[in-house]
Amino acid sequence: MLQYYNNGTTEKASLEPVFNYFWNIPNINVYVATVPDRMHHLDLGLYRYQIEFTKKLLFEAEGKSLVDKMNRRITLISRHSELKIFSGGLQSIALLTADNYRNIMKVMVFVVDDLLNKDLSEVYVKWNEMYLLSRQEMFKESDLKNFQEAIEKWANLFIKLFGQFSNSDFKLPKLHSWVHHIVDTIREFGAINGYTTETYEALHKTYVKIPYRLSNKKDVEEQMMKTVNININYYVKL
Image (tube, rainbow, N blue to C red; front, side, top):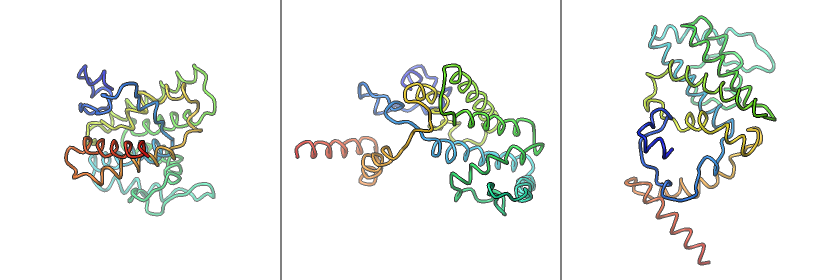
């Protein structure tokens, strides 16, 4: 990250050109200290972005009628005991769970087929190819190479297709982490299937959420670090 910042090329790596406080701390690598789990990173993260951007793309192309057509296609899918389909389509995705998104992945390739253009169909095909590779239990170096290629093919098309709809110009932490770091993470720690975020969620509450709430929301990072340092010094003295 620091290299991209110093070279003025943060945009190529889906990063904001903002100096990171943690770069002042030696021997820290956030991508080694924390690893992503599939549910938060993909199901509730990047795939949700893809669905949101798809709806915006369809609306931009032909207005509400094309979005409604997509929703109708979903409602017409035959019922199956192992497939949950929503009677109203994808009108409200804010309440969807990770399991809901995984069910949507099974059908979206067919839902968007010939709905707008080939790229829209292809981005969902490439997502599924990448997602299936991410579920492997074991990775050889050749598998990791194929996985990285699948990630880049999906990401390039994702950015090309939906670029106009990202308020941050695709400076998305999850996208950056996934494209540039997940393969190295697998090399270091093994398959994604064994990752959990419970430890990080507990630390996030103690060292991020609570200090943030205690701040006055101005110069937030500096205030948060001061709060954390005070707490650490207190416990050290006990």
